[in-house]
Structure formats: structure tokens, C-alpha cells
Image (tube, rainbow over all chains, first blue to last red; front, side, top):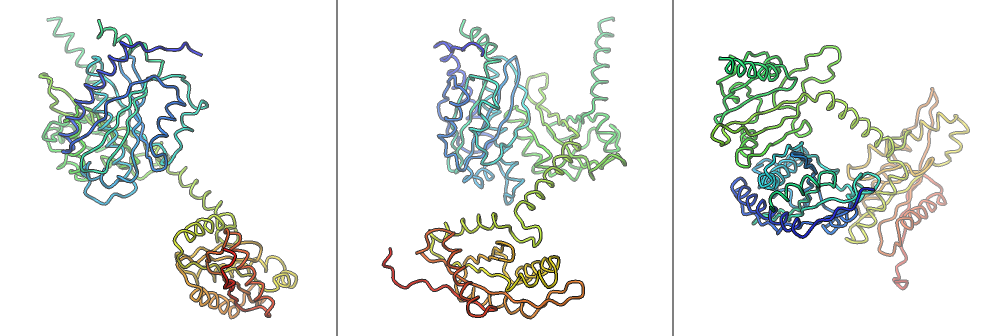
Length: 202
Length: 326
């Protein structure tokens, strides 16, 4: 067991501020790219255990959720973002992404992956810029649709105890598109992040 | 000029690496004109850099869906963020034919590609780099795996002898349909039937002949039902057919058709002509039914009546008219 990581009040505030700024920038970029008004919730920053994340995820209607994950790494900081979509809004999502054709099975996957890449990229880029680092991204991967997230995050599969989680809700005006983004940064790279924050706080 | 020489040297090895690296590298300017085309791309497309550089990508490779490609690239310019496409969404970006005659298992190269923004000296993004990965091996393995899985799933759902649904899978469908009917109260009927004196078939002609009778009966069922009907082998010589959106009268018509077809068509096995008949019981969905098993029970009761009445006929289960037990 590794030692418990504590997030100081200052660090938390700083992260909150960074997330807020990144969110604002992301909103602007997304509006320009998607030609739609994006309503973003205030990011929620917290240290969570895998089971707490599973619980946080479960509060979203667990029945009809599609999840897409995308790994990122850079400047010693690494993690994975997870975007959770409502199945009901597929056609709107496709329309938003500029797909005019009928949405078939493969196109559905592509829409999910494209949307994830864009929504996640917009936020993480803003965070990276403020920390003066650059992230590399892997291709997004679709979690099995209707896969149980609590299974993915069970202690058998997960090799970490705690992670910093930044949670943001997205809504897009006039479209039935709602999703939640979780950025999960594990304890392994947390001290790099805290060092960066110290630098900003000084 | 030693500095310049060192710079040139640096440039030379960077270019060497870019040229020989085993992924495709393509640099595109804002007008989608090619600026870089490394060896991987040259070799697989059978073009030289001179033939490609300076020309529009869409003129060179008409297989690329221009609208889609522009949309993808647009997001890279606006967000200054990479974009991706994997073989699962699009098998390839550039159509490169399989080049390995012995171990190449696919017709063409499966590709993953990444689009990355490239900044000019002034800091603005003025071009993008497309990286092409050959993932044929992985894709082929994955597709094979999926195929095997689909086959296994089919095997686990069906009965080996008749290819009708096996009992477990059919019962799942029944349960599903029962829940639907309980909610929406639509017409739905259930036919249950079995082969008359099947033991005699086995005793007189042998078990392989009995199997042939079971198989032929399944064939007749398959030919008689509609796409939406769900037929299964319930037990040894017992069959069930679930008929959604079907009134009891229509179910009776279908049941009689199956019965007559079977009676008219003997099975043939190794020169033997085997005449046989079936008896049927039909029960429609009724709100007094407690659960799916109850539904099967009442269909079975009707089937028993057919047996009692001399076999080779069809009976409908009559629900008691009183609703006093509600």
C-alpha cells in the first residue's frame, strides 16, 4: 500500500482554477468548431478511490450509457479520461458532429470517438497549456456498450488506490446531447502535478 | 562553417529517420497539398515523392472521402489537438493492397491514423501531419476472433440436430414476450406439439431414423413460420413456437397447416419410408397467466387433449370464463 496522498486546500483551489479556465477556453473552441452553444458545469475536483469513482459514475443513469476512454501522457503526468454519453442522444450527437448520413453501427462508433476526442482534447489542452506541458493522446477506445463500469473499476482490475478526478458535465444547447467527463489522474503521477502546481502557486 | 555542417548533419539524420520509419508520414498544408511523403507512403502507393508533393491529396487519392477528411482536419486546426481514426471505424485511409503473398491474410492494409497539428515558425498551425499505422495483423486477428465468437454464440443458442433454438434460449424469448404481453396486452399465441408414437419410430427404424424424423419436422416448422415467429426444440420430440402479434385463430390455421404438411410428407431414411403425425396444443396469452411456465402448462394441456382425442389433431386451450380468482 502506498502512502495516502493528501490534497492541500491551496492545491485544490489551484486545480479548480486551472480547470475553470480550461473549461472556459474549451467552451469557446467547441462553440466555434461545432457551431453550437456548449453549456459546461463548474468542474468538480476531488481525490477519489476506484470504488468512489464507480459510485460517482453510477449516479448517471447506468442503463443507457456509452463510455469512451482516452489515455493521455506528458510531462510526467498521465491518466485517462472517460466520457459518458446517453444513448438516447445519438442522432443529435451525429448531427452535431456534422454527420448527415444515416447513423449505422460503425458510424455510431465513429461519432462517439470523434466527439470524445474533441470534448476531451479541448479541456486537456487548456489544462496542459497552463501547466506548460504537452500531452500525447492515444486513440479513444469505446468501452463495451452497457459494460458495467463498477466491474472495470473493481479492485481486481485496478492497481491504484486513489486518483485525482476532475469531473465536468457538458450540455449542448438545442441538442439532446448530455455527457459527463471524468479526467482520472492516478497517484503515480500526482506528485509531478503537485510540483507543477507549487510552481504556479509561488 | 563547422556550425552549418553540424546543422546539416542533424538535418540529414532527422530526414533519414523520417524516411525509413515503418509508419506512413504525410504532411499536408492548408490547401490539402502534400508537403512530405515518406518512404513508407512511396513504397506502398507505388509513387515517388516527386509525383505527389505539391499536389492535392484528393486528386491523388480519390478513395479518400473528402467531406469526412476535411471535417476531421478542421477539428485539428480549431482545437490544435490530434484526431484519430481506427480500422474499426474505417478500415483504411489510403487503399494499399496486401503486398505479402504468403503471410498476408487480408486483401488490403488495415490502418489506424492520427492527425496532428503542426505549428509554423510564427506559432500558428499551418499544416497537419497524418501518421498511418499498418495494423493489418491486429485487425485480421480481431476479425477472426469475432467470427469465432459469433459462431460459438450461435452454437450455444441453437439445438445441434435441428438448428432451432434450444430450450434455454427459447425460454428466454418466452420470458421476454411474456413480460411484453403482460404490459401491452397484445395478441400472442403459443403452439406446443410433439411427434405421435415417436418411440415406435425409434424401435422400428432405429435411432438415426428417429433423428431424421426430428430434423425433417424442424424443417417443416421453419418453412411454415414467419420471420417474427420463434421456434424451438423443447425436448426430445417436443417443439414450441411462439407467435407474437398472432390471434388464436391465426395460430390455429398455422398449427393445422404444419400438422397437415407433416402428415402428408413421410420421412425417408436409408430406403425406409416413415409416415408419422404430430399432435398440437395452442394457448393464447391471457391475463390470468401467472408466469411463462404457466403458459407452457396450459398449451401442454391442450396438447394432451389432442392426444386423448386420437392424435394427429390440434386443440386450443379454453380459459375459464369467470374472473372470480382475480
